[in-house]
Structures are given as structure tokens and as C-alpha cells.
Length: 238
Ligand SMILES: Nc1nc2c(c(=O)[nH]1)N[C@H]1C(S)=C(S)[C@@H](COP(=O)(O)O)O[C@H]1N2
Ligand SMILES: [Mo]
Image (cartoon, rainbow, N blue to C red; front, side, top):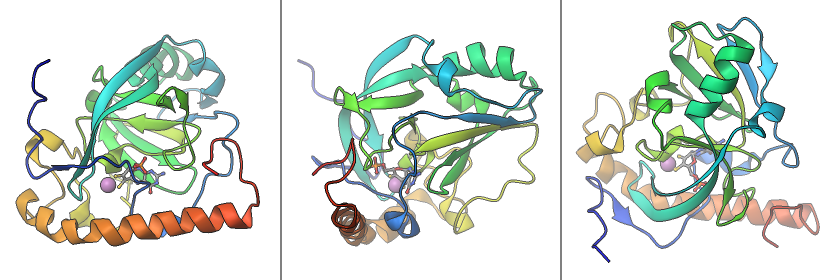
């Protein structure tokens, strides 16, 4: 076997795959996990729920590394789902009638998380709409029932609990969540595009101390949710 490729700049490997995100999202959970609904809207002729159509797309399995902007990397995660490119070419264009110039894409999750990416980045063959991980339906922790997986981009682009994708001609009306310096429009890992205005190598050092308390916060919120909901729901760890 050949040696694994080196990690991208500033990243460190972890054996864990923690539930993670900006702190406000620690206590937010999806409301619907037993059915997939994916609203397609924006500059399209016919807004629609693409949930049913996703089931007709060819399924793929893919191992990819996952890089959080705070510098942790989890290698070789085995995802299952459909390619975003197939979703775009077989559903968004023919059924929703997306304008060809609508290349500013906004992705939203059930917990209120949102991000944007250029359409071109989403059409890369390794970008998935994933509904499975480790051969199981996605857990609540990792994005049930559907999430984006964009391995070439920092984790904050891989929206969990994904339920809406908007295709816009312009990004002028879009406001990112949180502090602007923390959000890069592309966030490519290979270019260390962690944020804007502040160089990536500097953000590495600012973010690293936040990993441990963030993981603890997300774990605590998950435990509290399980306790208050009794036995828990399908897809949750008990
Ligand atoms: N809906 C939603 N998506 C999200 C987040 C979130 O809090 N909510 N956090 C993002 C961040 S910063 C990272 S690193 C990854 C973490 O994915 P994981 O919780 O499956 O490890 O999800 C991203 N997508
Ligand atoms: Mo992240």
C-alpha cells in the first residue's frame, strides 16, 4: 500500500469525527430525519421539492477526507449518496428550470445553518448529497437525513440537515451567517482559504484552541437532547 498523501496546509489528523460547528448550532437539531425533502428555489422557473427525484439518481460510494477550518482532519470517511452534478443535470435543470446563469448557490440546513458556493465548485465529481456514512443512514450528529459533502472545501461548506438549495444569478442579496472574516466564498482547503482578509496561517492559530471546548459543547448538547427525548430516535446513538 502506498503512503497516504500529506495533509493540506495547517491540518492535523484526528481519529475522531466529532459533531461540530459554530456554537449556536450545538443546541439546534433537525426536525425531520425520517424523510428527505430538498427544496429547490431561487432563479428557477418551477420551485420544487427534489426529495423524491433524488431516489432515481445513480448512487455512489466514496471515501474522502474531511477538513474542518479549525484544523482537524478526519481521513477516509465512507459516504453514500448521489453526486451533486447528477442532481443538477437531471433534476435542477430539466425539472426546476434553473437559469443557466444562476451560478451562485446557497445551501441551507434544517437548523438554520447556511453557506454558499459557486456552482462550478459543486459540480466537481467528489461533491455529494450524502444520506449514508459507514454503510448506515446518516446519524443526527453527522447531518441526518441529508448533507452536502464537499471534500475540497472546509467543513463549513458541507451543510448538514440540508433541506434547501437556491440557485441565484447574483449573490448580492446573500448574507453569510456569523462574522464575515470567518467566511470565504470558496474555502478551498488546498489554498488554505479559511476566511477572508486574515491569512489562513494566522486563522489556524486562532482556531486551534477552540476545537476542544467546541467538541465538548456539541457533545453536551447531544447528551441533553437524548436525555430529554427519552429513548432517542432512529439514527441516534443511544
Ligand atoms: N447544518 C449544519 N451544518 C454544518 C454545521 C452546523 O453546525 N450545522 N457545521 C459545519 C462545520 S463548521 C463542520 S466542521 C461540519 C462538521 O460536520 P460533523 O458535525 O458531521 O463533524 O459541518 C458543517 N456543517
Ligand atoms: Mo468546521
